[in-house]
Image (cartoon, rainbow, N blue to C red; front, side, top):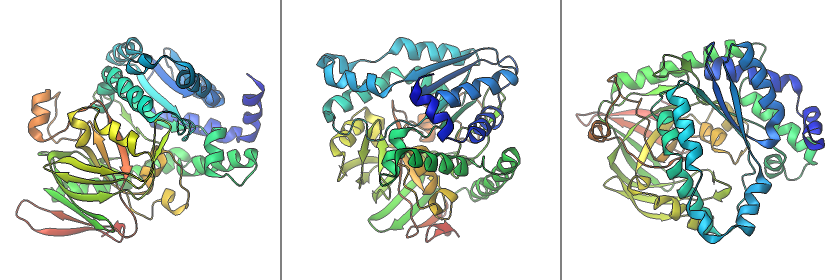
Length: 418
């Protein structure tokens, strides 16, 4: 271990690291004996990776295989790489991941990259690299969005991320504060994290069951800069918290998670909406997003920061301008009430209602089975090489559910469940 990582082990509470790793393996993944684990992480997250490996092997894992990313290597590409190199990605790696998932390998991603890493880089290169990577990642992403396997996301409090969140503090204190915020949002600072997640999953299930019972045809979002009708896919099903993957394993894909979510109808979204929190995407901050939908498709898009990257994302493919997810999160969620802007979608999406551009989750349908692309399209599900969440909720947002007969039922008032 290098000096920086050695120091971080002492700055970040070792007990918190260990409890998060155990929670991720046992509750996040629900890892089964004999199951392999494929893990990706920033190189700075080595202390957490090592504890994940310990708990995975204690749970009977077959083989834990980590892949690391390094911000300096990423920046070297943008500073010195040939221009044509930004139009391709490591498809061989993602093809291999797809093969691993077909063999029932579990997937874990530890996130924590510098949210502003690419802020000063050429937006054209950033957009091209993102598109190439999204296309190459398709074999792996499809297995995840279709819930073929159990998967999980957790976070590491990297130094650059901490500095972005707490710029006025010495870096050691900033990192310690970010670690505490991660542990709190993930419920690992409770006496019994496993029990806390059991109770939390029950609460999320109550919300999703209520929505499934109502079987709304459309959700209507109204608030400052927003008047949006989101049609819901035929046979859509609301989900939240723990989910049963097709391999028979129950997992909690996101830690933390405060959302209930479902698949919108890709052709039935109308109106306009603005973001309520910045979107940190592939190292670029995109802020003050304002878009207009017509016939389910974004026909106008603007942003006060990162607009060129946003426009590149929207041109990834035909499905990139349509919705693949709509999620409901009350303004009173613990992450929202912390008052912190994380500059990280995993956390910020759990502070507010949000929508996602691109690929839908094909598990969010009431009918069981492996659907063909034509069947998913028939339900109204979207297909794309991207899946990008951004926040549209606040304490000023009202949401009504509209049923097939046109009756309207309050779902949210002033950002809270009605």
